[in-house]
Image 1 (tube, rainbow, N blue to C red):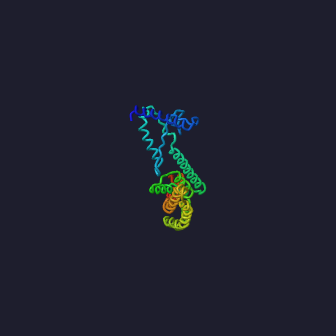
Image 2: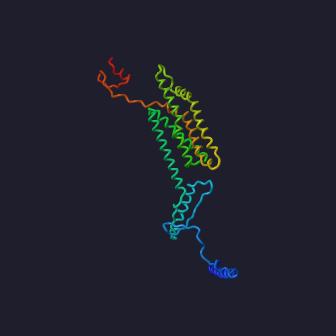
Image 3: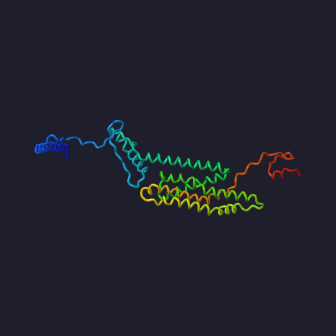
Length: 302
């Protein structure tokens, strides 16, 4: 429709509408309670940026889509449109309301809590185990267990969101339990073996020490997992909300069991760092020698 035709149609509607309304009012003798006028459509909502009128466009992702991925895609499309909009005198504000910002902030807070909890667990282990080597071996279970849980989550298409990170953060204090039990028993058995007149092979001692506590470690781990299973069985909104947290927690705990039965014994077999010999002394012949038994035999007078 041409502009001229559009204006003619509007004028016709205005004339006919006014005439129709006047006939309606005269027939009902109620001129005081009705009036017909052509005006702009009333605004149901409005937008302003820094006091200036604006137009707001909302982009929503489909159900099941990732908000962060959708936001990145929208930002890329707006970056392509920005030059043409600026040439038209339109100022674009793409960061007024971004749900991705809330998600990023929440995820960052949970990640900080995860790191802080891990650091506190490491400090407690070093303070109360009174053995740096034993504490370091036990602490190795934390990153290995969490990494294994993250890999499994990724294989099933579960992303690292607020709930999954929360489940990993809660599991930090549990994933070291199996490792602590195992390494403590291994260290004790190795110490007893060194005191024997004829020490047994280290590999055999470590294996026997692991088998001694294997049953207790496995039973305790599955008891913890069974406690969390009702959370996975929740229905409705609560189930959808807490299921990722429970899945991440269970995977981390099960991974810690595997680490305690495989990696921790292997690390316990590593020989401790040998201390350097004391400052050399001078033997009877004036030759410098060490302080070990072999050095004493080498430096002794013949």
